[in-house]
Figure 1 (cartoon, one colour):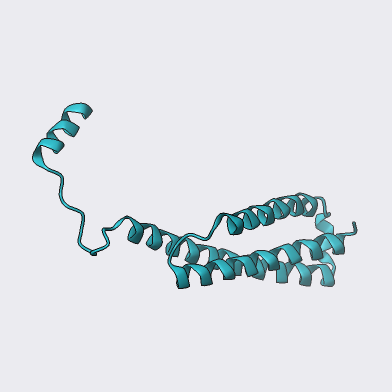
Figure 2 (spheres, rainbow, N blue to C red):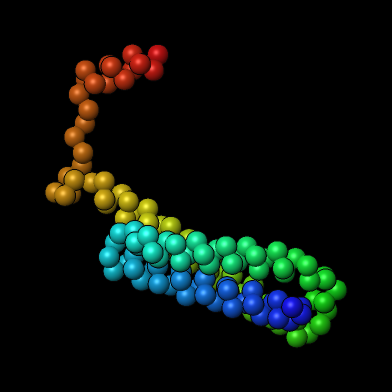
Length: 127
């Protein structure tokens, strides 16, 4: 595989990850729950491909960055990676919100405070 092909393949994988992050974001906003196992498997497969692509990308000589075409490809890839990271951060926040609302009682009321005897038992175990 040539240097350009390696970079283009990496760029395609980054585009697929970006699309996957968008789909996850839409799902989390609409359904307010964790996506199903098939989506998580797809994401894991994409991450494995990204790992292999990064290994191949590390073999590209650093001197090739001087080439304007290669530099442009790398810059577009970097921009896409930043977009993926931003979306992933937003998805993590949405997942956290989903997990917090899932543990709350359905009534929306806060969980009842533990009794004094329960606190004494916990304290006795820890001391």
